Length: 600
Image (tube, rainbow, N blue to C red; front, side, top):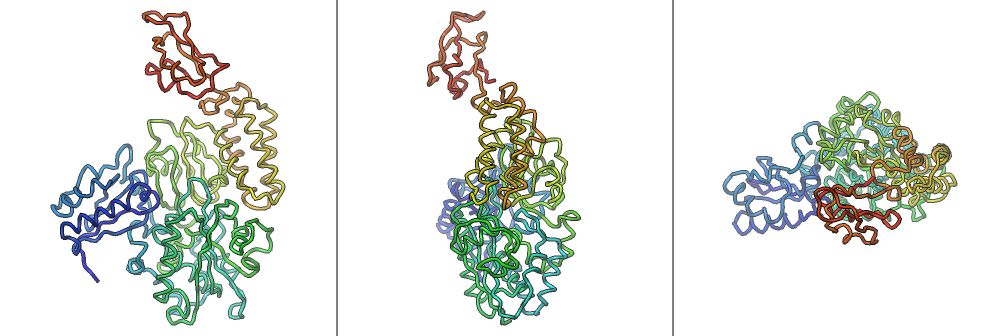
């Protein structure tokens, strides 16, 4: 094996790749080769480091120095100063703005993300160097009792990280019966991840695909299954490419396929691509899609552990859930259970986005409060704005207001406040966010993504969207608010699958915590945040107006005309806006340097 005096790690997850990190990597290789250092310095492609707000990120070892917001133009300086002269480049150690890398990482505890940003996901040897496949080797070579392995997963307290929170070990136990009787069984991985703003599973597949492969093989051993499928959306090309490469490498090394570790156990794995249907994140719809059928949910029972893929016993977990399994096998159930809360053990990965300084991927122990995530890890709200709410669980979740900032994050606490864990999307909203508009935004998504199989979801989501449209357009009534709540409750109680059962959460939670905004929209015909276009009104403060006419030139509707009024101390007559002609585009505000135009 080659020895290098330095390693240059370049984040090549989707976020940094979109910001030219591959060009940065190419430039490093080019400059290092030009200076005759190719035998001394190795450039390594990695997955996501987590702090997406400061990407592209480069880390140089052995010092472990992190450089932020790098560009190809910075490479020459990094090579000359750091790698040749031994001097750190201070200007690139500043993440910029309000982003503080130390605070971002201080409270994190990485289990599922342990290898992301640390290894080259396209080299199986690097995964093996960090204890990769040792858990599978332990289970197979020591011929561990499958029931004992399942019991250790139960004892660890690991619950499904895809949103439902069902105990992982218990799910495996339900599918583990009738071993050795020739009954075909399947192990499936949900890598569909359709929530807007969620990128946890994608990042794990991009940064550490072998952890999922290893865990699925262990699951196959536990329930006596010999075939697995990873269902991943085709919109994740980097994840798909690296996962397929990892599968090929594992097969080549005998870690997938026939007689793994000489144990007599066979397990194979294939990828199935999804076409982006949100409903295919539901387990029965996902399995129908793998079978080549339309991705519609089916009634339960029977549950997939009894009758799943192709009518055979099947277990399905998401990417993050599987990523925890090898560590539980190696370090023990008690180690995992020592983290988190009484009913929610371990850690949870979140994709932090929206109105927050430190946008990125993080992993924290269960029980960490919303306040710690938003203000300590997330670095607070940009531009000095006030925190208003956080949406967890994507379109299926709810909005948690500022009054509940000290809520510890776990499965039960989030449900208690009207939200849910979901797969881990976390969208932060500031004082300028209209909560009625947010509810409408998420409902529009579920209307489009409903498969239409059951009437409550097919009809109910459409009716709720129509009511919300009336409210945001200024034609809603108080009766509409009550009707909205009634339909939401009916939808929650009557839908076939989790998509419909949770589609009302954004509405019910915003009605609970921000009802006064709904009332303002229908009674006062006012959107306090100035978001709902039909409720906006633009006016000109004539005493501030200097009569320059820039606003009139910018108006596409010719709604701004000069008046006869000349303000004290001004030379030209002021302008005014004809509200009947105004299209409320806001172009006038963008041109007025004196801020004489007011949005109400």
